[in-house]
Length: 220
Image 1 (tube, rainbow, N blue to C red):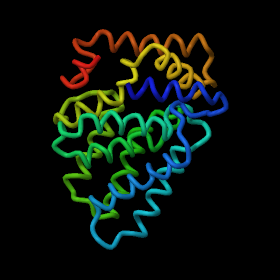
Image 2: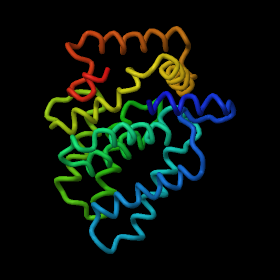
Image 3: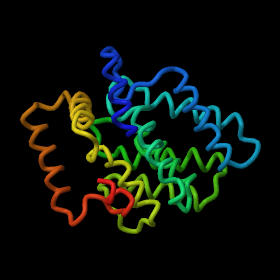
C-alpha cells in the first residue's frame, strides 16, 4: 500500500521533516508533472506564466510551518487520485484542486480555503484555462472548508474523500499524521487542541457515512 510504503521510508530518515519524505528527484518529477498539467489546461503561449505558477505553488507548500500540509500531502493525494483516474469525468480539474486546495495554510486563520480558491481562480484565469474548469476547481476547493459535498458532482465527492483518506490509513501512518498536525498547531495549549480535535472526529462519526463516494467508502 502506498501510504504504508512511504511511512516506512520516513522511518529511515528521522531528520526528514516531511510527513511523506521524498528526494530531489521526486520533487523535480512532481514539478514537471504539475507543469505538464498546466500546459494541458492552459491556452498556448503561457510558458512564462506556467513556470512562474509552478515555482510559486511549490514554494508555498515548502513553507517552514507546514509539517503535514506540505508537498508530501500533495504527493499522497495525487497518488490516491491516480489509482482512481478512470473514475473521473474531469481528471485535470481534480488534479488542479489537489494542487491548489491547501495553497494558503496558516493555522491561525479561518479563511485558508477561500484564499486558496481565490488564488487558484486568479492563476488559472491568467493562464486562460476554460471557465468551466476554473469554476469546478474553485468549487472543489471551497468545499474543503466544511467538507460539505452539497452541489458537487462525483469528481468533487471523490476529491473530498481523498482529502480525508488519511483517516483510513494504517495505524502507524495515522499516528504520524496526528503528530505532524499537532506540530502545526503547537501554539494551541494541549488541552484545547485535544478538545477541538475530539469534536472534529466526533462530528465525522455522527455522519451517516464518513466518505461520500463509493470508491473511498468501500476501501475504508
